[in-house]
Each structure stands twice: as C-alpha cells, then as structure tokens.
Image 1: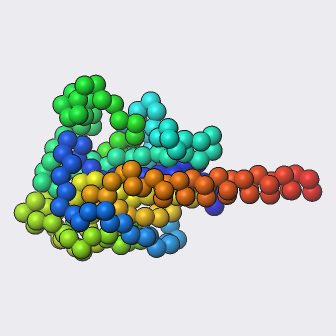
Image 2: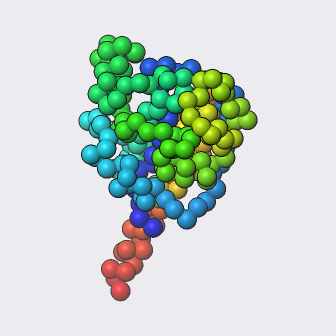
Image 3: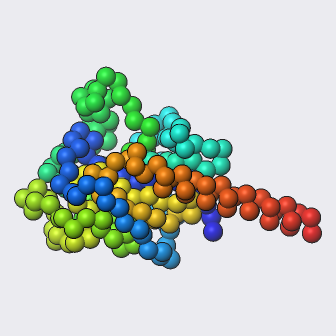
Length: 209
C-alpha cells in the first residue's frame, strides 16, 4: 500500500466563527473500507485546488518520515457563516479574526458542500466510514442544505483523522478540542514510523538476495 508520507487531519470549518451546537468531546472510530484518500488526490488535494502556506506540517508532530498535515475545508452550509472564497477567507483570518497578521499552518481546500444533494464525494466517503459522534443534528433553520441526514457533518470544526495509508481512523464532534486529539495523532505517527521501519528492513533483505 502506498503511503501518504504524513498523517492527515481534515476539518470542516468556518474560519471566522467557531460556534457549535454539538455535544462536547465526542469521537467515533471509523470502519475499514476498500478506498483510501489516495483516490481523491486528483480531485481535491492537488496544488491547483488549494491555497498552500509555506509550512503545512504541524511542528510538534513533524518527523523526517511521518508528520501531521492539516487540511481546512471551508463550508457555507452552517448558518451561512463562510460566504467568502479563496483569498477572501485568508484575508478574514489574517486581518479580521484573529487578525494581527495571523497565518495558519495548514492547507486550505477550495470551498465545497459537505452535506446535501451536492456534497462532495470526499465527505460522502468520510461519513460512510465514520459514524456520527453526536446524536444532535442542530437547528434546521441554520442548516442550508437538504436533505438532512443523521450521518451529516453537524457544524463547523468537525474533524476527521486519517492515517498514513489514507485510511480514515476517527471522527470528532465540532466541540472536540484539537489538543485532546494529541494522543490519537501520536499513536498514528508511531504506527507510521514502525511501518516505514519494517519496509526498510524488508528492502535490506531483498537487496541481499
């Protein structure tokens, strides 16, 4: 299996407001499917479709072989809180909230629907494998899509953790604090490092044959 070379976190977010109606601190384990994130690279994760920052790996988890990479996914389906596009979103973060020249260390994907009839295939796939960690759907008057399903991403800042093989591993409710994901991320980084170490050992054995 081809490796991504990093652990990925995809968060659905409005970058100006962090309001959430979800239950606090909930996460769910993802099922194992046949597809991986690799199959979506040509549709979502290519450079032409994202606004890239200079440093995209989170330094605390960065290693020479397995690091953490975060992808922010803007969406305007929750309270219409993200009307901007591309550079407008970046400017709001840099100059308005939090402002003061703030530059996040993640890649920003193009804005897409994450729920409803026009939802992007990436989120259909993620929701299929990862059960909703909350039983709350939210105020229908603040949800700008249809139909509404129990598997839906419920609000801004819901998070999906994906391992180095491209397999989704966990889904986190909007109010789940990113710092509380630390142990899960560390576990995946260690698994990635062990896997790469085994590959090096096997390659050495083949080279000796």
